[in-house]
Length: 266
Ligand code: PEP
Ligand code: MN
Image (cartoon, rainbow, N blue to C red; front, side, top):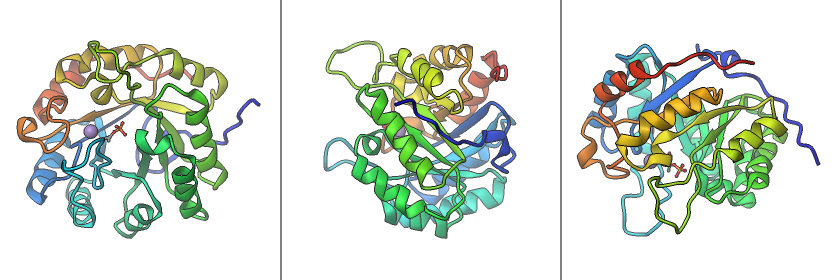
């Protein structure tokens, strides 16, 4: 069955966004100083329009840093008040949604490990009923386009029309240059079957290392994607998660300046 999503483009989300949106900030909120300093520095680039941070981290293996929880939302709220940047947070269940609403989070996103589970996605969708908040849905970790579309449909059917997709690549046992294989054919097919959905590329999780981020970012722009989500940290080397792929805010500014960013054709 041909999916039919009812969506509002990002420029009409009332967050001051344009047709091409750059989202940046740490993989994880770790402490107040790190969140505020990263936010202050990324806000120096007029290209960055949204601040991101993970508060609850769905780690693949136990006994690694799993996020600071609710207190991180307080730091993000403070960062938003200081910089004026809207904030985006990953949610994996109904309680996360509730807490994000309590702290005025502007954009929610569903992570790759949650998109794979229709029960979790439906729980999030049910928690969003009657609420007007933008939601972004990352592709599932496995290259299953129907699962990605299904998650978008569940959120959309809950009444969320401020909806976008995030392409973050797909896991594989094979070793290659990427942490997650881009498999560009999947977002291309998503564009074909759901032309109404805007897609943001997450080159950080595709690359898994800082060096490949510019190449992947330019490719996403050239493919007419609608934005980039790039992880940044004031001290990437000591980051508690995804240390190899985060860039310093100053590097982010240079990286963005070196990209040929043009608005996607609609
Ligand atoms: C993240 O954005 O930090 C994250 C956990 O991403 P993903 O869901 O793409 O693995
Ligand atoms: Mn991350």
